[in-house]
Image (tube, rainbow, N blue to C red; front, side, top):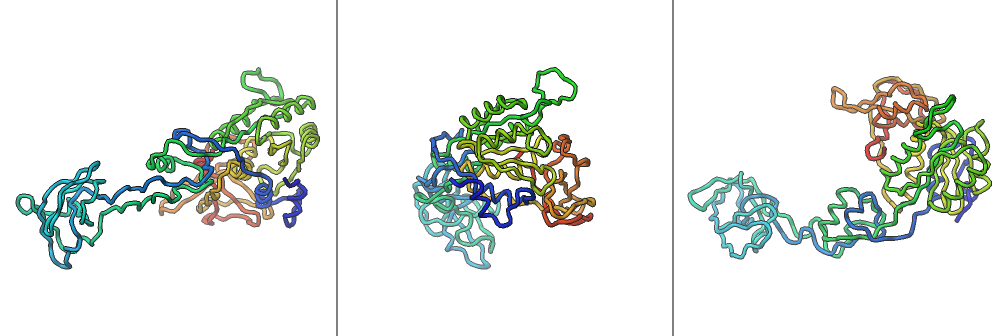
Length: 422
C-alpha cells in the first residue's frame, strides 16, 4: 500500500496548495483499491451491485431461431425480384412450442412472434404486408422482403459459454433482466462498500434539537446519506461530532474500525477549529488540499487505518459538488466497478457566465430544450455554496474547465447531469 507521499511523487506538478480537479481524480484513482470479498446475491438484490467475475451464459438467447413478427414463415429462396409470391398456408406455429409439420415449396406457416421457426424456413413476412387470395392462400407483394428478414437467430443476443457480463459491471435494471433471461437465480458480486459518515462542528444541530442562536440544522448528513444510498453503499450514520478532541478521536476510531471509507463534512477549511485536522493527522496518513475549484476549495484525503478518508468542506453545496466530482468516482472504484464515467452533456449557455481561468467551476444549471430543438442551459441564480435550494432546482452542474474563461450566450458548455447520481 503506497503512502500519500509516494502517490504524490508520481503526479507531475503536484501542489497541495493549488491542485487541479483533474489531479484530484488522478490522485484518488491511485489511492483507493476495490474490495475483494465476494458473496452470492439473488437477482432481486443485485441492482447497483458489481459483478465479481465474468458471468458466463449457461444458455443461448434466444435458444432457437424464432420469428420477430406476427406473420407467415416461408423459405426466402422463393422470392424473385419484381414478382409477387403466392403461398398456401398449411398450419400455425405458436410461441412456446415447436410446430411439428413439414412445409413444401409454395407453402408457408402462419407464425406468432417468438415462435420457433419451422425446419427449412428462414423468412417471415409481417401479416399486414400480405393479401388474402381465397381460403388459406396469401400473396406477398414484390420487393418488400429479402431472404432472412424478420428471423431472430439462435444466440444472436447471447451465446452459451460466452461472457454475458464482464467482471466489474455495475448492474442496472437492464442487466438484471438479462441475468434473469439466462435462468440465473444468484450471481457472485462484491460485498457492499461500507461508508461511515459524520458532520463536525459545535454549531450543527441534529433534527429534533431545539434551535439556538448561531446554530444551524445539519443538512449534509441527509444529502450524503441519499448520495451513498443511491450509489448502493452500506451507510453507517454516526451523527454530529462536536469540536472536542476526545469526541473526534472516538468517532474516527469507531468509523475506521467499521467502514471501508469515512466521509466527514466541516473542519478542513482555513480558520476553522484545528481539532478535526489535528485528529486526522494524529490517527492517519492525511493530506490537506486547496483545490483550484469553486465551490469546494478545501478537502482532506488520506487513510485512517485501512479506511480511506474524505474530509469535505462544510457548506452544503460544496459537500455535494466535491462528492459528485471526486468522492463518487473513487467509491465506484472501491466497489469494484470498471465502468467509465458518464460523458458530459453538451448544451448552449442561455446567458453570459463569468469565469476565472485557472480553476474548475461547477455552476448549478437547468438544462432544457430550446425552440430549435437544441439543448440549452441556464444557471439557477445565486451560486453561493450555502444555497442548497439551487441544487434542488438544478438538473445538472455546468462544468467550466480549468483553462476556460468567460462564457458568452450561445457558447457550448459541458454539463454533468444529476439523473442517477443525486
